[in-house]
Length: 492
Ligand SMILES: Cc1cc2nc3c(=O)[nH]c(=O)nc-3n(C[C@H](O)[C@H](O)[C@H](O)COP(=O)(O)OP(=O)(O)OC[C@H]3O[C@@H](n4cnc5c(N)ncnc54)[C@H](O)[C@@H]3O)c2cc1C
Picture: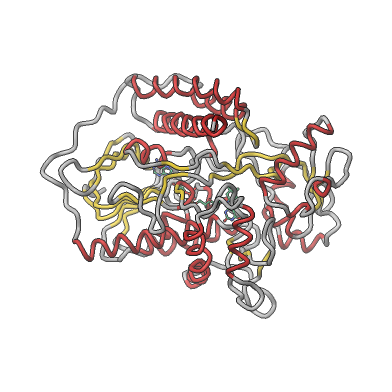
């Protein structure tokens, strides 16, 4: 690893990879991932990317209106307009870069429907769109000689160069500590799902980027805007719950209660295709009414060959759990899925700290409002990571490359006592109790006090800086910000 780069990007999901490809190839770039390059929420995305590609059957106005309805009109309208009007060309660019989207018989991009969308506008690759995007982008990134790529490299600290413009990034790789300098940093570290006991998110989703930005003093916004997906597979015991994509309801699946009856219509006229937060809340109300958490998705009435073709991954994954979706109802229950809030950025991905950018799920652009419309997040990761990369390129071509100042970074302590067992488990239990679909204010207040104690302990004691410590510190930081927001929203 070199000790100086123009740009360091933390994250090899959609946002990090697409940012890297959109930077000027003359810039030296370090791209890191704390685990395997393809272990990310991006690689798990199933349904697709929402974009107004066919301007005859769809309009920007309609995509914006659907996003506003899902977001409870709490969206940032100017960022949303950027998302919707610029997004289609990024989706087409993915195609040019070799991402294989499904086509219809006429050779046009095939569009599917998902909850909250009034038009078929979701471009997809079967039911594994995210993996197709990540694989395609990764191939292109690896062809770029200006980009150094390191997997299993965790960013554990980020400091401003005291006498100058850039940053020193603390990186840990295979037991070795590095502190390269970079003029610009893009945090593309993904979501926070692992702060919950049950989530659809990948193991990397521990809020590290949000924590590093927060420690540097960048504002973090709306971290309590958390999306709980209504239909995660309910049969599994592990932390990571397998998602049954919204596209399954888009293709006509019914939601059934324990008695085998459809029930969503009793609460909302939009039925199964109401936005996610609405359906999750309805499931919890129905659970209280029926006195059980037993719920199902049923799409058995559709042609079995169509289902196997359209949802091959879901079909196979459910089969592994003993459920044949062409014949059996799929057991489901809501679980944590997505974060709408994050590091506050403008429409160029800039945080309040000069030279620090954020993109993708760790950022808050404001496009989603209180609740994300299905398939708008890959689109957000594409549009705003590109805009961040373009802004950095322009800054460097106008102002030149930032150089490290003469003042060396302060030494860091990395060695210390091992982290005690069970801290992360405790944080997750507190979060699951305090805020699952609906916040419980009493439990959130008590939980906040406990989390603050844990965080104080993590920051004040001399623990060894390793992956366990970094992730525990992130979970405690993120949990404390979420619960503080929940408690203060309830008080106001
Ligand atoms: C099961 C599932 C299905 C989904 N389906 C869809 C869908 O159909 N359509 C849609 O639009 N959205 C979907 N989403 C949401 C979407 O996938 C994510 O919001 C989006 O992919 C996030 O991309 P990202 O690049 O911001 O983060 P990620 O793809 O999560 O990538 C984060 C990267 O950051 C790295 N990282 C994290 N911390 C550190 C650190 N400290 N140091 C170094 N590297 C670090 C990780 O290793 C990883 O490479 C889905 C999400 C899930 C979980």
